[in-house]
Length: 337
Ligand code: ADP
Ligand code: MG
Image 1 (cartoon, helix red, strand yellow):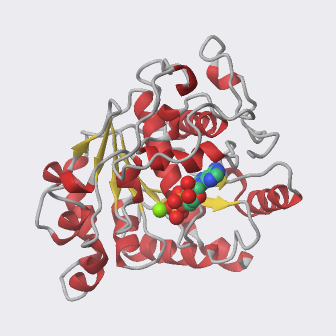
Image 2 (cartoon, protein in one colour; image 1 turned 180 degrees about the vertical axis):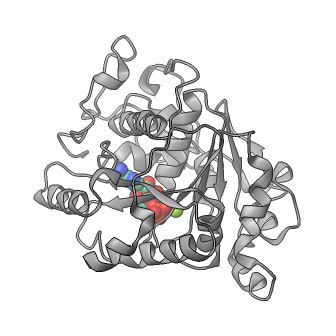
Image 3 (cartoon, protein in one colour; image 1 turned 90 degrees about the vertical axis):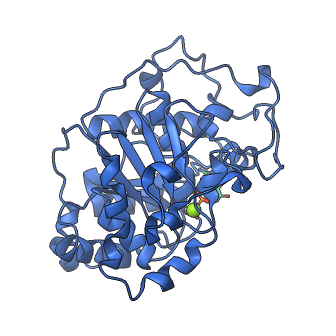
């Protein structure tokens, strides 16, 4: 990425964000597999556990966020497709989840056709923003889980949002393509949504055993400075298993490292956005000592149900949760087996 263009990206400015109200947060990166969905689902769930009314809107036709929060496709009557084409209002599309304070607007396969259907329509980039106008005040956080492209769906999400969170996988090529995303977001900021700002770059799948992870992390911090969240999400097997149970890892295995990192991130997001936790979180016991998790709506449930031996099981919650781990250190010390 050239530094010339970075200077022109007004959306990179760090602004004081101490205002209340609804925060609509777009989680985007046109690369697939960088943990957009994992971040949207677990950050949303972690904020809900802290008492914030939170809505996750799945705008990826692959519907991973929908199944990730345990919604069975067969029960979906109205989806984010209906929001985009205007055939249903927000309230008709919102479905409850098993987690208090967390609701979801599911995606459906029809959404794949929405980009084409909308091509000829008026104000096609504003469809989602218009549909979300009713969310103001009802939810404290609204997350938009974007597809891996910079097409009309992602543009709609950038127009509807005030904040953009960009997950970056700690792998080679991590920064490649990021300029394209930022150029698109900057164009949206200039012409369609002057409120849009990047409110955070999140390092994901950090593997402390590899030099590569720390090099990528250094490079991203050199580019984006204080925009990069202090919390780093480690590579964790439990995070990749959770979707098959249709449950975010923050409730599936509350004391695993992935879970703790997303809870730390939730606290960091709260601070950035000037909100305080509504309730003191009282995480349940780890699943190893609880009833076995049931598979998700897809009927699967992959992986181990007992805690991973290298998961970081803190003596939760007797200790002060947010001081247990220094947030500027990656949470991991070893990679999951
Ligand atoms: P995206 O939405 O950007 O395509 P996903 O959130 O679906 O990415 O993540 C891609 C894959 O990587 C999924 O299988 C997910 O479970 C897994 N994954 C995400 N974050 C982690 C992590 N920190 N450690 C291990 N696996 C992860
Ligand atoms: Mg995804």
